[in-house]
View 1 (cartoon, one colour):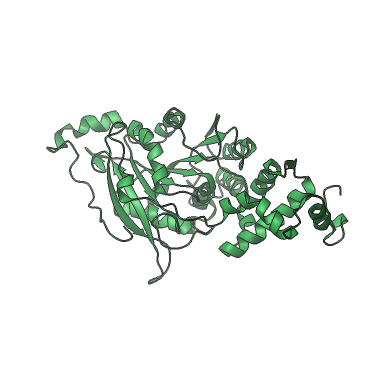
View 2 (cartoon, helix red, strand yellow):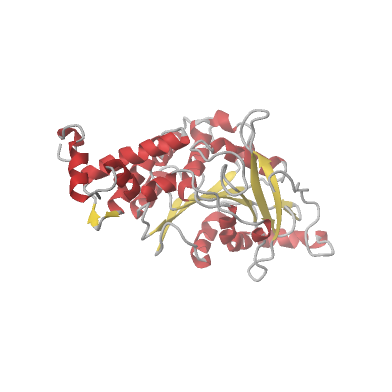
Length: 380
């Protein structure tokens, strides 16, 4: 009962806190909402990150990738489908010899855009893979609005990668808030296989989760404890009120309850069902996983990564790599290359063997012939 706010009279706790610490020129709700602006901003629709098409080009000193820009129709009925701005970086074309290349499909966090995918180009180079990324709805150059229901948009991108681009092996790479989308998509293969019937052979061969979280509620609780309010640590009772404030603001803005997002629960259920033989089809299971967790993350503490790893290991292999960094900021190449060996072990594609097969198919400019024709259209 010690932390249960029901022991206080209605409004008593809020009134006492505002009287002790709140400024005199604003209401308690204004004061408290401002104090937790950082938490609500990361969950709600941020301002669009602006960039130019020329920014998509990869740095020639790092890799030998060519990029193409196009749009992919998102989820929705006829006349309602929004266009998703997308970019493909490839070392030549999809096919190298007779072996199709894999592709890394990158999901940026909700405060960013597809440019963040360029960080993993060295990983793709090491794998011999292409890189496909898109702006989430309401972000960057994409149409639509950011919501917590973006799994179907991801599904449309996966189908596009199969049908239009010809990729068969997909590595899903997600960061921050988007890790929940990636987790839901992969666990749907086990828990809701009917949603994946258009996707052949469960093509998600591997998943990388950069700073995943177990649930939005736990993230808000942990984030609240880390925030300083007028130089004072926020007591547990105030954390509970913070949850109500953040939940109300985000629900009103996005039209859905953020506390319904519970990636850890999905992983636990998928691991149990896949391992018990109840999954349909019988071979449906979680893909292998690699987790990155920042040691100084202000929003998602290390405990989230460890809990996700423990749950994932009950259904598939899962490695965890801690690094001395924060939630936002660039990831250095040495860190990201730590996932390469785990990814390679899950792919049929072998870069050296495929390049040897491809020697007879190289055209005059050194790029592979016979690849897909990508439309430059839509939102660009």
